[in-house]
Length: 159
Length: 260
Image (cartoon, rainbow over all chains, first blue to last red; front, side, top):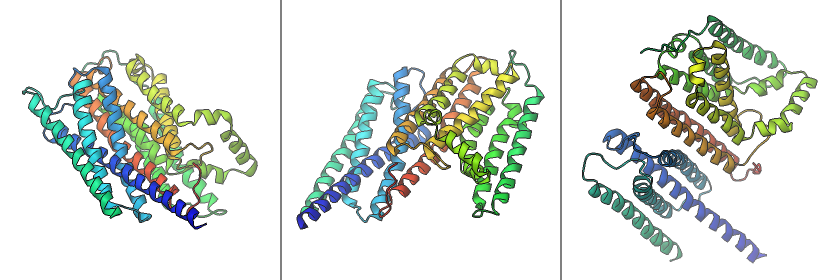
């Protein structure tokens, strides 16, 4: 009987761990997309709303990505609220997941959106490669920081 | 701006719309106050939502914005945001179907409930159907000659506007379930439909930015498309928050989770 209860607790713990992960990932994706919109589209105005050279598939991919990101930012926060009311927040692990989500999104945006779909470029009328390089390096740095933090969060728990 | 192809919208349209709106403003409180005698008091905030929704729809159908929408694409788009997105969201929170069910005599209420449970409504109220009706309708309006046709015939103009309000309402309802809902679907399915639908709204806005409908100047078309894109974003935000909040409430610990 005891072992059965133990199994149930383990399963719940595993579910909640997964929910911490997804909540962080979604929030990371959403907030990075939001930062991208505010800084690069509105404040710096480097990105263009539509540079008229974007192929149809790029427009479609960008629309899907943006509406998903809106949803991810808000859904991620509601999942976080759900974890809080269950007293199951693992803050370090959550932040690690958020960093991973943000970094993965930045890389996806830099490689797939900018280069493969050619939705828009980082900046116009300039030498492009330093911008592309720093864009993707920043994304990779966030992703790696997230991975390291997740590892340390796991070690702390098991220690 | 020259709109040589435009006829004028005949006055009967605004007159009929104004009458219908006045009717909606009058009958809602009449019905709720009347049913208060038998049921729990109808809460104040629902009146406010309903009135605000009627006013939002009214602003786009009659008066200065509606007149301007005939010559300016930006004004037209502002009106459509009000009519197709904001008004449905507000009206839905007035819970009109719940109110009607309260007011109907038992036999009629049963008949209505049987109709709502029918297979036709099950198919028509599926999130995928309402999304198609709503956003497919927009693609037809802006990407075919319907947009020009609408400004030449008052009948077509009236039909398009009725469609936009009703399709917007059905869509919002099929995602949020604020009012009575007969056929329910999982959060996951509705989230997927919502994301696809909002994406198609953005895609259409960008396509209008690049290529406005016939007879619209470039700057007016770009402004209208930006209003559609960013104005849409604001109402999408409200939709997503309400949707996630309904998930948050439904999955509360200790609550027997309603399957869907």
